[in-house]
Image 1: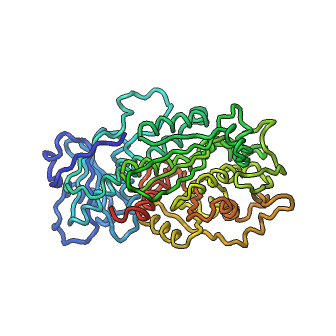
Image 2: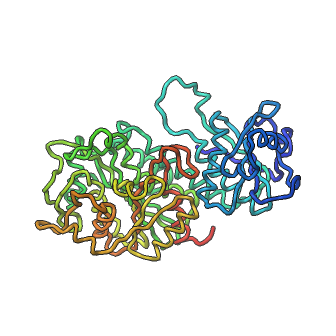
Image 3: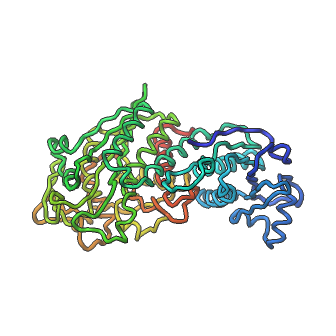
Amino acid sequence: MLAALTQKNAPLASLDDAGKVTHILVVLPARPEPSGELDFFGKDLLSVLLSRRKMKAEEISGTPVSANLPSGELCAWVRVDPIKSVFEQQVSMRKALQLLLEESPSEISVTVYGDSAEKRMAAQLALYAAWINGSLLPSRKTGKKEENCRGLERIVLHGHEEADNFALLKAMAEGNLLTRELTVLPPNELTPGLYRKRIQELATREGWDYQDFDVKALREMGAGAFVAVAQGSDPEDAAIVHVRRRMKKVDKTAALVGKGICFDTGGHNLKPARYMHGMHEDMNGSAVALGILLAATRANLPVNIDCWLAIAQNHISPHAYKQNDVIRTLNGTTVEIVHTDAEGRMVLADTLTMAAREKPDIMMDFATLTGSMHVALGSRYSGIFSNREELMQKALTAGRVTGERVWGFPLDADYDVELESKIADVRQCTLEGDADHILAARFLNRFVDDVPWLHMDLSASNHKEGLGAVASPVTGFGVAWGVEMLRVMFSGSL
């Protein structure tokens, strides 16, 4: 549940204006002004604070500061520098808000200064960061008093009453929060069966159509790639879930496809403990797809959406698939199994085939797919691939606009020589692992049927220091980016 928003036109001038609020964020413009020109809340105290720390005023655009006011309230100051990237602006705002949110307030007051454009930018950055970080993620720690675990309940914005894109920002924050809430759940609370129930409840609440294809149905359909991974689990509670959002008088459709491996042991090619730890987050791609769907619904974006989620686990058993197996996918392609820990591209293959058969106008898939993407980019960027150059350019722009930075990788056909098999149509991967993120994308490209397609390898799904506007290690990366892509593709400027 995101904090409620109250807007007041005038910026704070004194504590009398703030009322009983105990936590205050002051957002200042970064433009230079003659000494004394800009009057703002806590100006004298900030001047003393900066003097004591031997800091210049402009430095608080990168290093926000805070101090207790004489009557006990906590106030933080930050400057928004329009020259900096959106990502850098988000980091500054997140740091400023963390100075306040670490005390778990139920309410904060945000007061913005500058001209109308500066106030708008400051308000958007502050609200998005407050909504994203003010809500608590699921925790199973005991001993905490309930009154200290409610999260941020109210934001009072002073100095900017215009609505602007606040509804869209709030929708993106809601989508991001859903993604992170699902991703942090322990694997015993998010088995494929339990995950499907959660999605069904969410679909009922949001008015989406829900359908799933269980392992029995997928066997009958010939979805051998998905079944190969799912058959190692007991019970066989895996499924490809299809959630539909339809709007009246809208004829454009986007397909969102997500990898939902609720736990990945690596199968018979068992992961060592170091790399198996955290594999409950291997369902993050499906959570990103759901987060985008929720945000698009709440923002009322004029596009029909089909959400296809490949929900399974990669376990070890006498029935689990193994190296040198040859399986047949839903579209008839035969695949030689080289490594059982390359299960993500297997479940996505049949899921992409199902999504592509509906002929969407665009298809985007999200997956924590390869370690080699993490090697290539670290966890600050995610990598993207596309079979359309114009989509690639839009994707890169969306990364800059939202602060969820992406980097494009090649999808050239000559990489396919590495996947040639002597006994099947294609090898699943190589044992060498060179450029595996590219080979995985080339493998998936066989199942998109020339639908305009974007593939995101979510190397930035977890960054231990937080990333951009998000303070938690689980970032929800991809939700804001995906919403921006839908907005640009289907609704113009909101």
